[in-house]
Length: 198
Image (cartoon, rainbow, N blue to C red; front, side, top):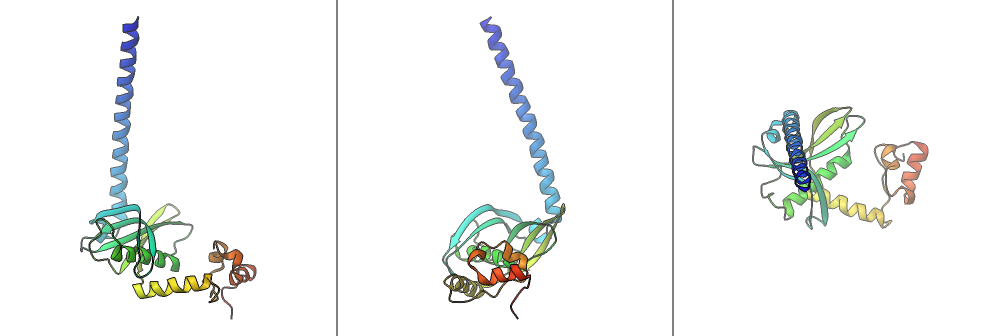
């Protein structure tokens, strides 16, 4: 009886193992198919390049203390590093804060100690837009270190109350802002629907 029970347990373990191997093969086939489809949508310079970073966080102190979580960084076929950030939106649009986010990522690549990121950084990156089931890559010009340093200084001057915020390009930006509760400009924009004071 103990021998039969042992053999049944052994057989069950074997079948579980075989099912796991089969599931893994299907999943790996799906991943390969996904990567082939995704690379077909990418600009050729990164589609034919190599992914060097994905979902990692790094920091730098130049031009200011900055940190960035990278969605993806590719080493392009031209030898440059390209930052790619994915956004899921109801409409196909790239915003100013997308440019800032990609630019901060590029600055961290240029000045931080990022493993595998020893190539020069391209002057532009891409926003990967997922909109209503379709994917597109929108090219975005990156800000230089001086422009980032100015934005950094202005941000902290606004927080200290030394400078008034100028308001966003659309009221929807204020509705999502974490600082709206203490920002009179944001409250006015949301209440009136007007973008900027005349």
